[in-house]
Amino acid sequence: MRLAIISDIHGNIEALQQVLIRIRNEGVDSIACLGDIVGYGPFPNECIDLVRTECSTIIGGNHDAGAVGTVSSGEFNKEGKIAIEWTRTQLTPENRQWLMDLFVSTSVGEVTLVHASPEEPEKWHYVSTWQLYERSFKHFETRFCCIGHTHIPAIVSPDRSIRGYVKGQRHIINCGSVGQPRDGDPRASFALLDTDEDSASIIRVPYDIAKTADAIRAAGLPEFLAKRLSFGI
Image (tube, one colour):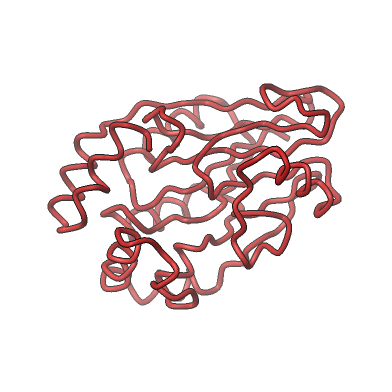
């Protein structure tokens, strides 16, 4: 199976469109979305509609839950809270119900899919250090676990080979963020996993950051959300 994994789109339709073009060129069998389709960005409905069309497996993230009120907006930072409350006013009734119906984790063959962490997925733990990656291996039984949430891509095996893929081992693959990378690289990020070839990689895709930033400003969302995109923070 050749699987593309995307996550943390955050209403950034420009980034999502470019990532999907690249994914189609990779000749994948299917696309999985790990949630946070909305929040921060100015195109929540457009991103939902495109994900629903293009992805065969979709789970929800904490911003998706915040947008429909199952997570309080008080759980987010100042800018995130403003964006969540704005997103709530923008969602169509159909898309709101669709977000409410999403599961927080699932599995496809040898792959566990979860937005934040395989440990208590509904509590949105951040897996951001080696110790937390090591702990996470104990909380899934499949060969692979794909996550997002931190917006920082990584491919981690149990023998501490954090950089790169090790054939024959179990791995946790953080696909990074399509719409708001935070690893200092402003390009959109996704992961490509090939279980037949026993390989995985992180792929970066440029997009029109200025166009997204202008749309954020036009929507009246916080300036910080526009500026951060150019810095990948």
